[in-house]
Length: 119
View (cartoon, one colour):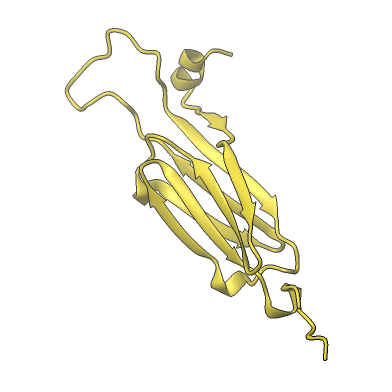
């Protein structure tokens, strides 16, 4: 089904945003590209062991105008990840700037490497 047919039916296409995931000693970071999405239309939630972020772009035709030609259609971004027990769910932080969502997932203390001093 084409994007135009989806819009005519009132449906939107779902896009899995491209992500980069990095790990440090004390945290994991997730960077997700979601261009054209307003911060107000972004949602992040944890349900059970699953972290999901999503957002829906609004219709692109300004009020009072009629589209003569369209290649861009409303779409929804959605991506989910299963969280390990190493993640401190209460400490998760999110920042959204310039179309990129940055999530910081801190590790719980027991999951961090422990260095043992040799005497």
